[in-house]
Image (cartoon, rainbow, N blue to C red; front, side, top):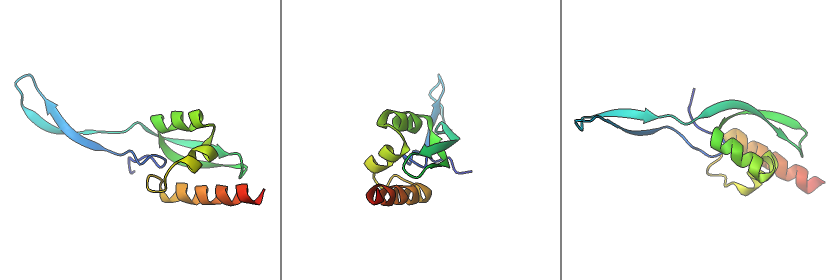
Amino acid sequence: MARRCELTGKGVQAGNNVSHAKNRTRRRFLPNVHEVRLMSESLGRSFSMKVSAAALRSVEHNGGLDKFLMKSSDADLSLQARRVKRDVKKAVQAS
């Protein structure tokens, strides 16, 4: 299971545990990623994606999945999210 957000590209980061004696051991910072179903208003269906908690708040803040995808750059999105964005663009232009 890849720990990467499909909407923002946020992934695992590496760092150090630092003890009181300044001993350093490597550790991983894992993103808060959850499997959620997001509804697209223009397509009328939902999509299952792995999304970080911060990205989920951003989707709600922007007014839904469709508006969030239109504002986001393709470089941050996963392959599935880019396909949904393409379909949303087609649906908006058709209506």
